[in-house]
Length: 156
Ligand SMILES: [Zn+2]
Image: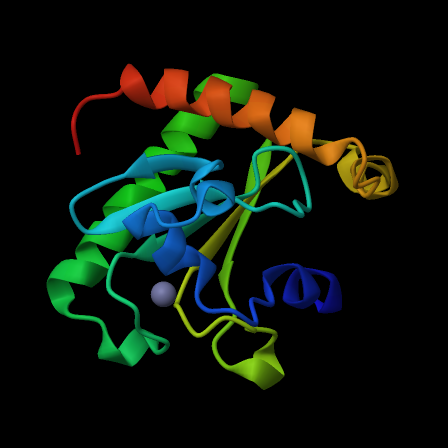
């Protein structure tokens, strides 16, 4: 949890909003899908390859603040993400979760849902992908592959 929290700390503002408005090229680099109500982007410090973050476009911190339409869009976007990840990399399972509030591990106050693909025997993988020198190229490759898969999915 500390690992994810550190990765998401953005002293200069909200990296999810920056990815949505396109203001920061480094933030938009890992956007996989920008839909009417949601954004899907790769986590820069993934637990596993293809670790996605799915957020409503509206900057809000609390799940309880979401409208029913935003909630539905978030869930449908999550379903699309599972479809895309299955096609891209055939994971055997997923961890899906929300960290709401600082004590729970959230360090950016823009609600986002984590989708972490899992494979049998992948528990030893983190030390390998934890090497930050390896990450950028790996993430670009993953992002390109996922965008390709998303392009072939039916419109949301
Ligand atoms: Zn935001």
